[in-house]
Image 1 (cartoon, helix red, strand yellow):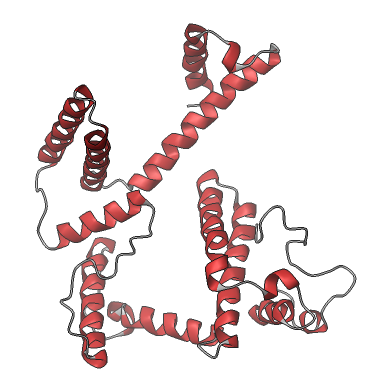
Image 2: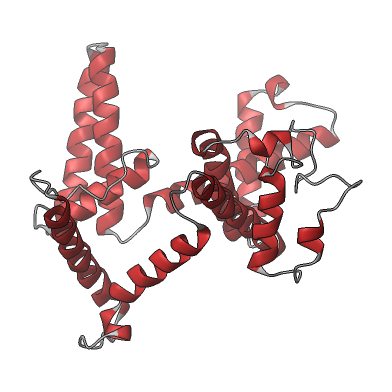
Amino acid sequence: MTHVTDDPRQKTGISNEKQPATVTETQPGSLQALIHLMERLRGPEGCPWDREQTWNSLIPFTIEEAYEVAEAVETGHWEHLRDELGDLLFHVVFYSRIAQEQNLFSLRDVIRGVTEKMTRRHPHVFGAAEKLQMAGQVPGRWEEIKRQEKVALARETGENAIPSVFDDINSRLPALLWAAKVQRKMGQVGFDWTDIHAVADKVREELDELDRGHQRQDQANIEEEVGDVLFTMVNLARHLKVNPETALRASTRKFQNRFRYMEERLHREGRHPRETPLDELEGLWQESKKHRP
């Protein structure tokens, strides 16, 4: 989706009664066609909803689009993936158009910037740096190049702030991803466990502290310890080379699919989970594992 579901406009925002000449005159499937479409939507004769949007108002829709791309990948629906990537591209063009209207930058600047950055950060491909043979060698070089870029930028702008390993981490990330990035940075500077068993012991230690907080009925401490348990579990996942966000999404989807099986079974009998005894629900749950592994 590109707009909220209760938006009365069509997905493209273009009326069936009047197609813009700028879109039909441009080769379908070209980036220029999408640029012209956005110009029309934001223009005087365009769509009122699109004209009033700002960067801030678009944020929740952009986040939703990104997650819909992730869902299409996880479920293996390539047709949906194609559509959702198009919606995400639409947002890139949308943000760029708003910037261009304010004489800040254009979509061409965005493309030029990312092309130059990716070229600069892959000297083993586009430069004279030593060729890398394994994917695992790339992240370390990537981080070093980013560090050098930050130092150079600070010199150019005259900033005197003390650089931090956290400078390029966005704290608005989903909590699991934020925690994983923070811990990865700690690993890069050597502040890390070297033994997976020590991390597992730390998980058990945090669970014991949570149990003690629960016994005291100290709600503030319980919340703090739950956070510590989750943070440490993310660290354990990192040491096991597991993306915690991906793993949790997979487990949640698995649980949802299995419960959906239970709902379908009960529905065929004219029943609902709320009206079903717990022991019967448990039996259906075990059954669902065989049908929805």
